[in-house]
Image 1: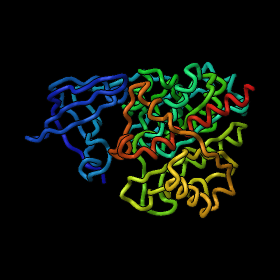
Image 2: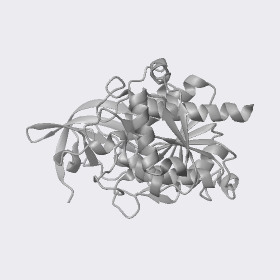
Image 3: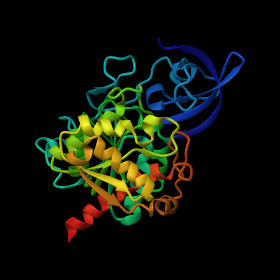
Length: 361
């Protein structure tokens, strides 16, 4: 069951569009909290707020922050959001959004019968942290490429929660965002990943679309019980709509967990069981020992037969990240700690760029 606490706001730590980070006092204990002000209204020092402390109390990966449910100073709050499609439906936090494909949207007529990506590359990631090397490698290859990030609802739902997205937008590594499913707060909203991909192509004129869940992932140490399975569904959606689906492998040789070493079991399951279309898998050009292990994983799982495997020169990944002053981490590890992870994502970005070049020739 969820856990709640009443707290007093003692300090404003950080603010940006849609989000404020706070230091709060619960009795004599100081805690950190995040508020999504489009849902709670403004918050000031001295306000009394209700917190959901469940994630922190259970030691889960919410970044060490509690979440503000309500500011007791507010007797009512109207966010003035438009649209009739509810996200987080039938919960106390349901929020109405103007989805791009809705009848009241200015894009409705454009999207009413749209169902083709016309060959647009779609890079499907298994983790939010892969977004940075994929996007950086694409922009490093061609700064004029228009990149759209579609955030699914496999993890965090408010896009405002992502420090990484805020940084990539600020440094113009990604050009626009779409939140689909129950995720919300993007430049455009969409009902599902199919309509999000078409909106990226038709409305935002994306050259490449990158799809990944927000921060956080659900896992259970079982074959199928993880939200990383959505990667396969994204690839299938891209293929069925006439896009060119590219799979970013989740690779690590630094993870202590055997199931995530070499190619993660999350990726293997998604590509085996959840992908109904043939896609192209980007494999980074690692040292011969690591590359052999990766290729063995793909062969033994049958994935190498189901999909097209391309070894991609990924050595520029570090330079691409440095060019935009990006220092992403995954599970607390940076590029130096786990280069194969970031090079695998960079390889997917490079492969998508190559597809653009090949189609232009």
